[in-house]
Every structure is written in structure tokens, then in C-alpha cells.
Image (cartoon, rainbow, N blue to C red; front, side, top):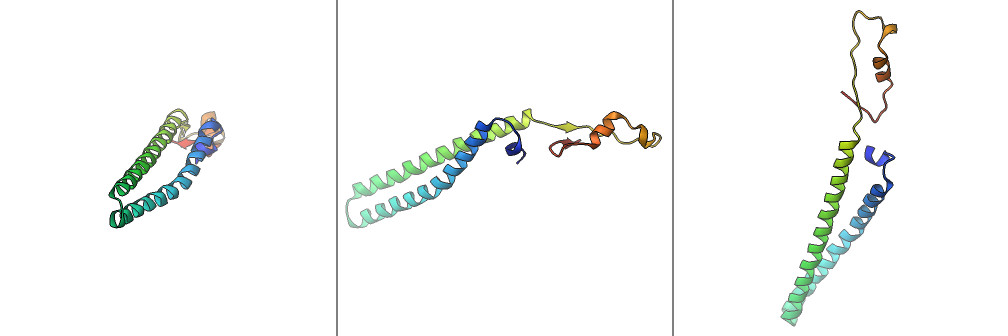
Length: 124
């Protein structure tokens, strides 16, 4: 979620959103189309031409091959973008523990700054 809130390149976010919308529409369509093709192939095997049944089976295999290829390529692309973002957008804060003999009004500027941390930063 931090990647989506980051004011980085909007193109990557639009691509992710577009791919998610396509995935949500294409998945049911591919499933229904594949089921109808296989159902037609079974009917053709029982009642009529075996050649049409083989054609429908080949169409089903091609449909699911293309769907799986698109899904894997899209998933791999977005994983690569996310890993690249994680590698280049690390925010780390070093917290220095308070010393027992230093009064609280004489803390180091680094320790005071670290108390005002941003919610996006990681505490180490």
C-alpha cells in the first residue's frame, strides 16, 4: 500500500490498475469461453463431426495458453517493478537509546529528530 501512496511515477500505478481491471474481466470470460468450447467439443464428439470437436479443443487450449501467458507476464512485470521500488525507496531511521547519565533536555539532535518520524519510515 505504501507503493500506491508514494507520489512516484503514475504510469506504473495506471498500468497496475489497468491490468487488475483486465484480469477481473478476462478471467471470467476466459473461464466461460473455455467451458463452452469444451462443452461444444463433447457434444460434437457424441453427435456429429470429430473434426469440429478437435478444433474446439484446440481453440480451448490456445485460449488458456494465451490467458496464462498474459497473466504470468503481467504478474512478473509488476513484481519486478515492486522489487525495484523496494530496492530504491528504503527509508531507515536509526534510533539511539537514551543514555542514563544524560538529562532529557540535553539529548542529541539526532535522537530528537528520530522521535518525529514519518509513518512511512522503518525503525531499525
